[in-house]
Length: 462
Ligand code: URA
Image (tube, rainbow, N blue to C red; front, side, top):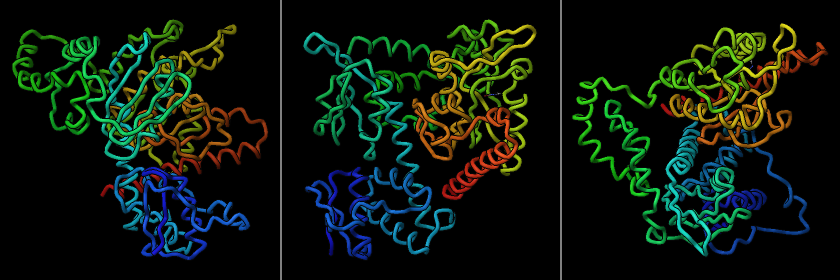
């Protein structure tokens, strides 16, 4: 038996380092005991050995899969991934093999982890305290998997200007507006349970709660009961559920209009009245997303162009034609996908009779993120394709260089995988015909990757 030690439950780098040693030794998964918490000593760390520093060459998709699976709470995960790694290297398994039971199991584990990451982003509620005369926001959260470190950068980006702590039974993280620090596991009693804004939350939630939309099963699925005790608004839920039927009848009687959109159509109607940034002024109309409410695949572009602004539909101009052709070549059906943009109004500079496209700035993209988020929450796609840098930034909160990152999978702030590719209008601007042809092929290859990934997910879910 060989003991492979890891620093922590989510020690991905440690697991990788140990795998290197185990592979060199020719160890089998059954020979290895994975141990957490004890001081990690890398197996056979031999400074004279060149192979020690070598990265393990792994097939595409393996690194992303293992990064997620490592955060799962199943104690078998290290061994299962090691088994997969050995088999991939020996050519006994292939990442694309959708019928492989081990791959399917690991895919489901990765999906569960991603869902947990999203739940944490959605259900963490901070309570404000005064600490040394300074504001400190503290939240208590109980994740199912080992996702706290993995999620920390999301909270840093989102709440960069606040001093906050998130306490969990696994560990605590603390952001002092400059550095992220880690502390020990906490107990629920360590976090404050009430603060001044609690009452406001409850009033807000009570007033937006729409009894006619009450679907208890769907609600419990999206917001499992175990998170309720952290969320001020849920103190109202059982009371609201009980009185829902009466309130619904009262609403019907009064013919009250429903204030919160619950379909894409009503969301679009709400967005048409958007005044969050000045772009609505010169534009002809809003160009909202279109496609099935439960599409598995979502495409996000930058902003509508001249044609889109006039027709009120995304990707119907010259870039849209390239997009449509590439979709067909990749074997994707546009009518099955949800197609939208990071910014919903056309931004342009008038030049004579022409309207010249202007790139939306960060503020405009951020203002419109509100709508994109709600589209993502309603459609719940399995995969989003970011067409270009603006879409990638809006979805992930990261500035990315498309040339280096294209073809890679990132993650949206909602926890949905995001495949990054070029914007189709880039292909319109290439003067060199050979280069343009090559870039078109690359674009189609990226879209095929999206198709393959979706098919794989579908099989894994059956
Ligand atoms: N470019 C985009 O990003 N979106 C459109 O809808 C059209 C062109």
